[in-house]
Image (cartoon, rainbow, N blue to C red; front, side, top):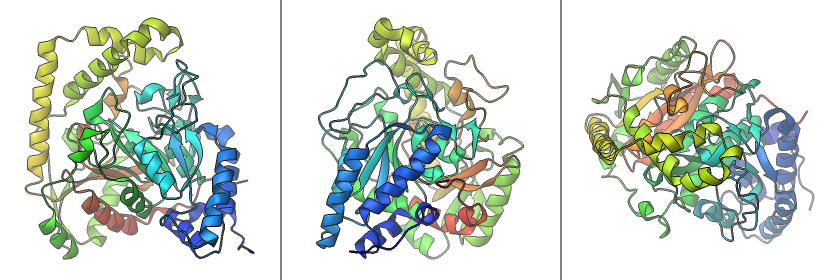
Length: 480
């Protein structure tokens, strides 16, 4: 069969669903798509360092099989034959799992994580595993194993993390979908820094297994070229799995009235231009202001200012994160601290200093914050705000200039708009909305009620159309 030629620039500009349609129509083959993905990924890899490993033999073999299936009329899903990448903290059967660490180089899982298995079953093709900081513990793209993952917009800048390589490879054009995780912003931070959509579903909507030391904060989700890629990925990967008990609790209280308001252009959207009283930095604020003006002019809704009637829950998140990571990896620190990220190792003694009473006070304060966050959604249907108060900073730095480098968790000092919604488990998406004067992406975040993932994504589609970010800012990198 003679397939149509597909140039790298065309491939890199198409949605995952559009690529799946080309395969379904017999116009391109999965083999072509995999070769384009590998070519683009390898062309940019020396510059951005997004991959721990490429899975070329597997990808080519699976592409041949998916091609045979397509020619026989057997299409597994709308993403049949589409290349993807997987963050290296997901189990992939038969391939090493490093999680950004040098501590277990020989560990090979014998089964797949639920999200990975469901995407494999849907006919996607994994071309490689993407970088993450050690055990995904922070918001930058630096690890003892792989070094620095850089931003495709400017290689001197940070990609964000912990889904560092996933955001960077999507932004570079190599794959339309990459799998990530988010326990404090780890999908939305790099999505914002790299200028791509990134979605944290409701806690448990996509099962997380194996479990993590921060189980009630950890979400799995996609980073993509377009919101529609998120929609199709969520459709294919959501649903309970007995290995993750939280995956049975991800439904909300019902959205019928909210959907009626959305369809009628009457959806109630709360605007938070300075969440928790923290204004974006001067390079970001005018871009956010302009984006909110575009959205409110183009997307029918009832907009009003909103605020969560609770302080920024930094102490709460810090208590949960420091104790979980510091005590959860205690034995590993004792054996292998010398080859681990010093910032992660430093959490060990900090965790030991927490008393039980202080920890349980944090649990109570979490409940108070979540209650306040949920109560706000009695008067609004969605929240619209910045994703990050800053743009991507120096690639080798852990904090921006003037940042709190000595804080127990330096990364949460510059991510105040993301981690609160891990405490509440609510769905949240980051969407690119423009460029700061220095040429780096800025993003808005849409947050919805617990369980209202589809509502968030439906509104996000309208916002994406209104902002038309890709039309204003074409692809950054090509195969050249």
